[in-house]
Length: 98
Image 1 (cartoon, helix red, strand yellow):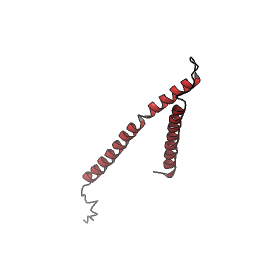
Image 2 (image 1 turned 180 degrees about the vertical axis):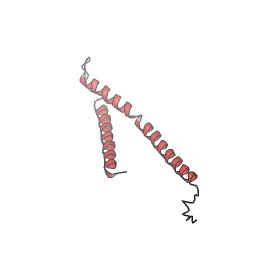
Image 3 (image 1 turned 90 degrees about the vertical axis):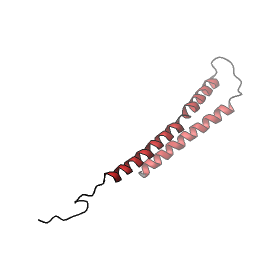
Image 4 (image 1 turned 45 degrees about the vertical axis):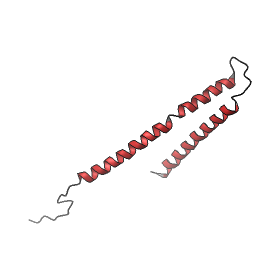
């Protein structure tokens, strides 16, 4: 993997983690707010934060499935490569003289 791709994936992971932690902190700190009733902006933001947290919960499962598929694909490709190698004259570097 290229260094640029690795840095990009680390930055994206950190950004996602920071957003998740700030959402949890916002929900915990504003759960006991003084709600005026209808059209409360804090309640709307709390709902958005809870929705974000609940939508993020599926990402670890999807990541795990992707990792498992990558590992099995790599294992399968390695086994196919070793199974397909046949001893031919070219691979054995046999010189054919007439």
